[in-house]
Length: 119
Image 1 (spheres, one colour):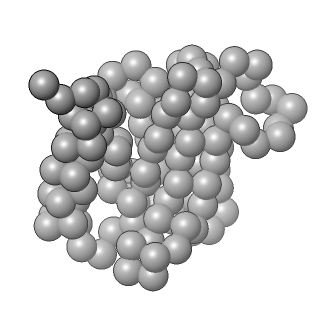
Image 2 (cartoon, one colour):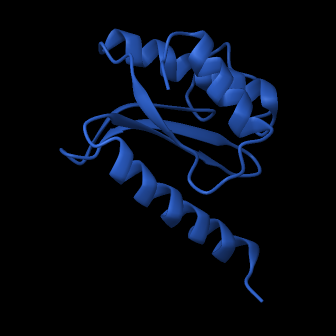
């Protein structure tokens, strides 16, 4: 029987291969979560470079005290969308990194969409 991390790794690989097939020229919004924090990056896979990033570890006075809840995910989604706007990025592909589209991952995605990113 596979552990939960091995199952997530399988989902991650399966999703990443579909992203590569469908959206060749688009940037990727990659999301990672832990129990205490949530992270988001906009990545250009052709160049192998991170163009924008945001997380609950950023030293912002407006950030929520607890980095592992939906409020923190909404904050990170808003911050990544604002940073993307500054760099002229409007359209990305959402990469949930094998996490289920539920809870904090969904909250981050909805927040990013509300603040201007299209995916």
